[in-house]
Image (tube, rainbow, N blue to C red):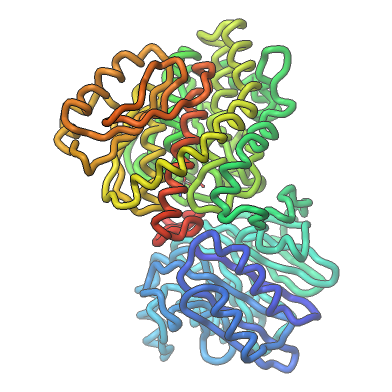
Length: 610
Ligand code: M6R
């Protein structure tokens, strides 16, 4: 999704802006632009369709100078991807604006502004902000007051930075529904939609809250809440590592992140398991008090995070003995749902900024849940700030659009929650101790499972000319099959579907032929014999299967089936281990197909619009 970078400094900021945009590239975008102003009032704007590198080439060909600047990567919503629609947008020669989010009442505002004589040059909703600020400057003496008045008229979501050519000493920043951070340097300040963009220039950040408007100069940051009252927002040292945006020895971020899973899980579990017990303060300071009363869990998430929730539903009902519902956030937020007694609302999100999940949390907070908990990877993100409790995943920055390490770390966090809630319900001390020991074995087991990479790479050849694939699993492995299918379609563009294997004969069997590879996840659990019957159903219809099976599951490769063994493990952690070969399979298939693994077409890393 769109990315914002801004700076107010004494030095030229074009390179800082470009580097910031590069570090936001992973979010997905179709065009990029920047505008800088110098103290003589010269404003230079450069925009390009395509990659940040094209923008950088244009800037290097015709260098721009100035200490105040704004920059943007655009992911088209209103208006096609084009240079004309790329940000920054301008009103006349003075007001320049970058914007993330969607202005829902842009048509009405456009009409009103046209009547006042403003001419629109783009199809974007953003352009109304520029003209509105310009209009408000006729009623107000400062840019701050004009922006404050303008944003009051906006409906929808925005994170925006406004600059005026006539006063290079400041920019005005406003946030509602789309995140923005302010970075604190020495005699200079920065703005970004994600702290990752600014790590080369600062590690000190203040997160704006909903409705905040801030005036940012070289020396001061003055923040006002939605009612215009001055407010303080705590400045915190970033916990994100400086090289988070670096691929290191790996060809793609996705591969790097797949291989980071053992350490990411270990870091996340560190200090949170002790003497066969889950330490419940990992979920928040007073979590134990709340968790002991939980009788139902409602999970809300999107995409891969939703799949983690689906796995956890099996766990909560089977091990903790409490009921659990899981729903896609974009559905939950638009329907009337029932709140069970003593129900804990759990949101799952890598980014903490997914618009639908955030909207669902806000709605749920009005509905009478006993408390809200988020399991999230980004400290200071909106979900973390707005939830009653937060379990911080320590997966480190995930840059690849395809979520990998965030998923397995989420599952580890959810298993901890099964322990923390289950001990007050159906999970006895021995059960909790077994769960804890399975979790402790996880980093090494993940490491061992990743050694399957070479044989999976060889297997991937079989998929290169395929148009479709079917993924099968049973029980808590059926969401793993869904996750495998999502990974494959997301990065290789092969159409993939997933089914709970017992559903085959109710329709999908009709699809089976030699051109439809069938991928089966087969751990050694109580459903193994049932799954074997489903495998026979496929074999009898001429299907070709790829089975990821427990070493003790007794599958053997033959003409119709290639079997790859996954290390034997405790049932608790099997869904996590079986995810890994599916991640690797999708990666190697995408590599053969030559798709853009880290930034697949049409997708964005952090989906901050609905
Ligand atoms: O940041 P979140 O976990 O809230 O993101 C949710 C989905 O957008 C995300 O998982 C998406 O499905 C991934 N691209 C899947 O790989």
